[in-house]
Length: 117
Image 1 (cartoon, rainbow, N blue to C red):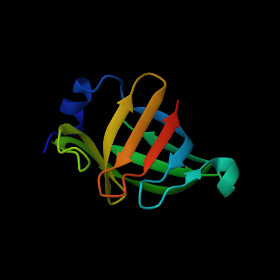
Image 2 (cartoon, rainbow, N blue to C red; image 1 turned 60 degrees about the vertical axis):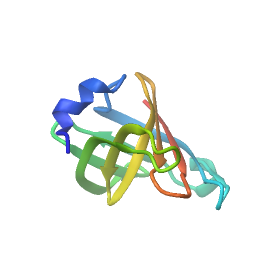
Image 3 (cartoon, one colour; image 1 turned 180 degrees about the vertical axis):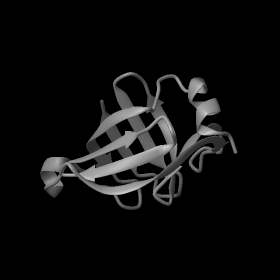
Image 4 (tube, rainbow, N blue to C red; image 1 turned 135 degrees about the vertical axis):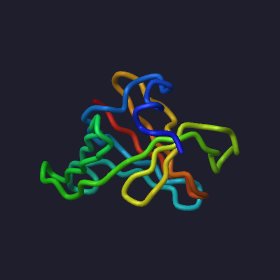
């Protein structure tokens, strides 16, 4: 396990910020596209400097939990990737830059979730 503080420098952008959910795309066994408009609510997550992730639905806080970033194997290609675990699930950090965060569920379905700053 790698601490949040030591691993964030290794990722291209900083995950520490507010991220607005743009869409989710279901994996091969359950293909779908979900957006705030199609499901009727907005979602944002805030990753804090002290290792917390705060989740909001329609601007109301619904969860406040810890997150952890570590190196690990991606389910879909077995390569070593940056993984983030929060709210009981592990995701591959597929893209992280100053404006975009894309995470992919690290299991066989591989649902992709896209956030913007």
